[in-house]
Image (cartoon, rainbow, N blue to C red; front, side, top):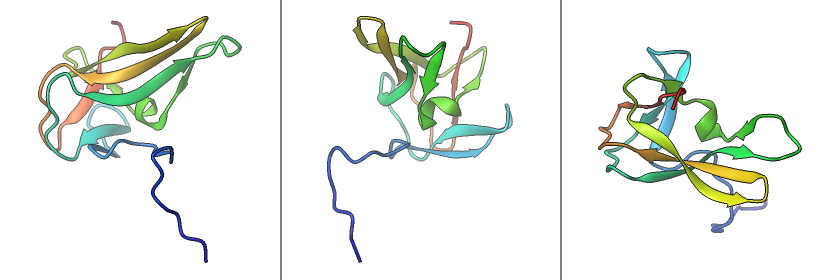
Length: 106
């Protein structure tokens, strides 16, 4: 039997601070498993690749729901040629159990 060992390059679909659960907003949402500080970068959510119309969403980006009063925003973390990577950053302190949201119109 092969055992996986820790490797800093090993892919994790979600950061340790969040989980997916049923949302009162729409379907499934991203929820805090613990308190998350303001201005905390949770990692990549959307990736723009020139040969693909639109964005590739990571598991984190695929389940973020819209709110007109969001508690997170997307920050451009990498920009080279026509490639762009956006990360999810908290606008305020997030309480354990609270859903993370974005304003899709921003």
